[in-house]
Length: 459
Image (tube, rainbow, N blue to C red; front, side, top):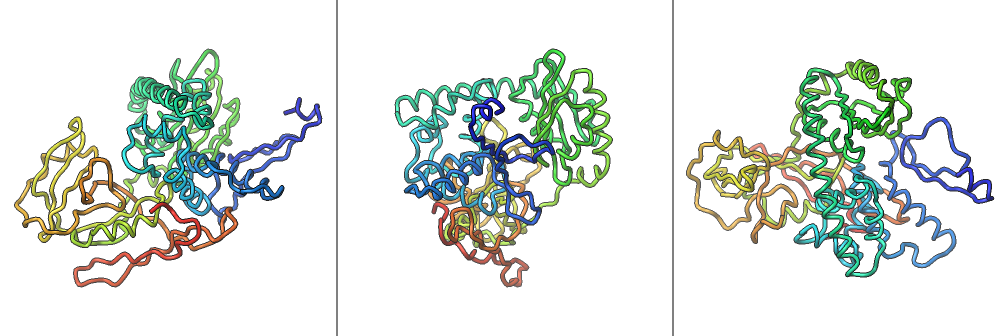
């Protein structure tokens, strides 16, 4: 940057992370951090907004180039930023573009990922995103860049296969490092936060390791890969624990750090790891019992199984795209029991027929196979003509003509009022979820969302 300025070039830096007090000698574009403001954009969303504003400023037509929304949506979903406000509008527009005019690279990567059916936020987050990230995590992100900018279908297929192979290699590296990290975590399992470090841990997977440990232990985690006299680490957090604030308080033990409240990166001298661990865990002690408590399952509405028709599922899908801060609706039915059960898919998942006494539905509980022996199937009524039960949008490649229920643990989300977004027009609004009248059974109806105008989500 200093060289560019010396040559007389104007420099523009775009960054979505929390800025430090020391600013570079350049024009810096960063999203607002107003706590009451809209959800912050990720780097891809920020770049999209910048290009859109620039093209409008110079009068370029069209204002949004073909394919840009798809690229921004990939980054927005894969970076796990809150799918609210402009992030949600951008994800919806990009997913719609992927349905009607997918880029050659996205089409090839979907084929290499064996994606059946339309690309949605779930397939981006769980299938496309990891493959796009894999080459960079292993050292060189160039193949991912080439895939996203190529217009040549044969070249795209070859690049997509390389990304798929890199993802398999990344998974093998991750499993090895995760196994070593779990041993350390178990030795320190009572600590309010975990700091794990290992010789030769690949810096490209330590963030994934930290994320896995957060899921398992429900506390802040720092994972550090040591190489020589220094280490590079990634941190992941839980609600109500500000990572950047904590790293700042431990700054004297670090060479550098940056990020935001839920995810951050750092570099550290090898010899400083023990002192950093002690300081970080002391900070995490405040509020630790509340953070470690088992999360409550919040339900959007109570229903009967025969309420769960295909029409209702289609209406609930209008609340999407679903993702961080905008999870899929959770519906609850009381008095349900199993009429049959079987373990499927490498004996990890539990598939069963369930009934509430009037309707029989087919359900699947992911990773719930160990719970199978505790279920005692009982006879149920004959199957009716109603569509089987479902969580919202739970149609997958294993589904038949109906929709089937899946076992998930999800949290309800707050309402979002309509507003104007970065597209410069009334964009998609999830609308308010209003609880309808209470029936004698005690259940509530989930009313149709409102305000879905402008750039609409697919479907």
